[in-house]
Image (tube, rainbow, N blue to C red; front, side, top):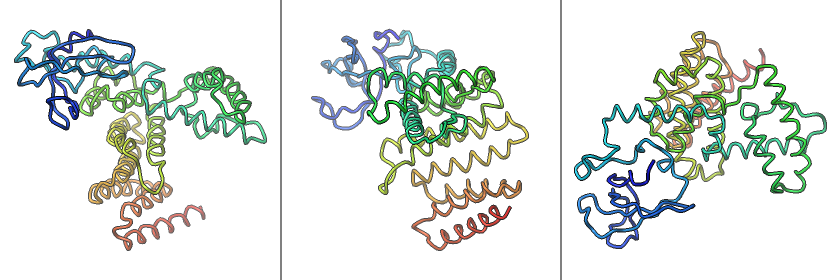
Amino acid sequence: MLREHFVGTTFETDTTGMSGWPEGKHRVLINAFLGEGAQGVVFGIAPPDDPAQTLQALKIFKPAPFLEMQTLHHGFTVHTGLYPDHPLAMSGADRLTMLKNEMMPKVDDAHLVFRIEFYREIIDATVTVLAMAFAEATEPVSLDASPAREWLDDNVLHRVTELLDEDRVLPEFGVPLQRARDELDRAIAHWQAAGTYAPVSRNPFVTLTGLLFEDFINDDEYRFLSRSPEFAARTEPRHVGDFFQAIATFYYRLSDHGESGPGAEALARVPAAVSACDLLLDAGALVPERTEWFAALARAWKARFLILAKEPIDVVEPLLQSALKTWRTQGDLAQCHDALKFLASAYWPGNPETTVRYLNEAERIRHLIDRA
């Protein structure tokens, strides 16, 4: 977007420490574009109700989604009272159409994962998994059986090559990672030839969710885009199960913390993960024979994320009980066991008696699974 087009828009920012401004977050008016460098963009800002006030310079550091978009970002509003002929003044419906036309190519971008901070972290964790697997291996490593199988793609291959070329690998992992790179290169070629190369980086549900994680879009826009005909045309039944695998990865990344619980950064990502579970609920319709099963899965994992965020039990339990009802009807003992374990954790430590009751029921089901 032309930087001059930001002039006449308002957005919320922290004005603490700015001369003449109150502390905390407040809505400000951009009334001048002052310049741009490699690291950021500088605007002049003023109070929306006093636009003639002496300019306060505000530097916005890159990367920032709204600086990369042609559509006005959801955090910005045109001040039509002062700028009635602003080039970005349009109806909400027209803006959503513009947003859809801009976001769909991003959904199609197989390398979008590098622009999503959360996904970059997962790629680096995947590289670590590969390095450890090849460092500890006493026999050939099969990447088909890798716990990170759905993330193994040319993006990970690029990242491994980058780390090796820049000599950013601990000496003891240099040779194992070289072997991992060679094997991954061969595996990708094999998967492509066999028609089984379907990494999550090519999954439209995952890439759309990445745009939500990175704040290119908000939750309302996420739902709008996911229900658009243009997005539906990009989805296939095979994408649904892989989308769930990605959601499971999100959970294990966000729940990977010490006794202190998730940090602020992890908790800030929980709402997007919850929205991903809602999308999984809708996506299950692509697989008619398993629609109810995926619906149960979506509710159960939504509950898991809400437990991470310490949401009240009366929010969490109905989701897990609904999933349990489906899985009991379908005879899916493994899923029943896991749901009961999470119900137990939701009640701990506030209600130890209920915790023990659900743990005992989970243990009973575990015995049934072991005897089967």
